Length: 119
Image (cartoon, rainbow, N blue to C red; front, side, top):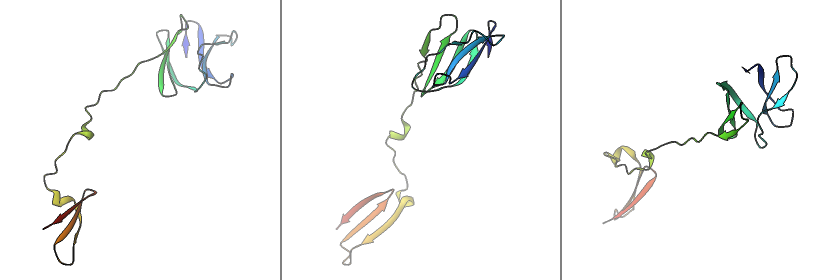
């Protein structure tokens, strides 16, 4: 990545992958990010900021100030999978039926649930 007469790259020279920079002649190498636990990955530079993945987070590195911060990301869900759902034709989901020898009791299984009926 190139910005402001410097080349930015990823290196693990300190044991963990971080963002480094150097001048156009390959000298004056500087460590730009300071991650310790996880490697920096998928870095992208735009308008003086490097955005990269580290662990489960996205980070922003301001190249002018050297300030790094986690980019806050929140997702919204209506939790559709937790809503009550009525089955219109339960017989379509019936997997087993067992009737007692005298016919007084029966067990029905549908969608992983068993129902015990007696007369």
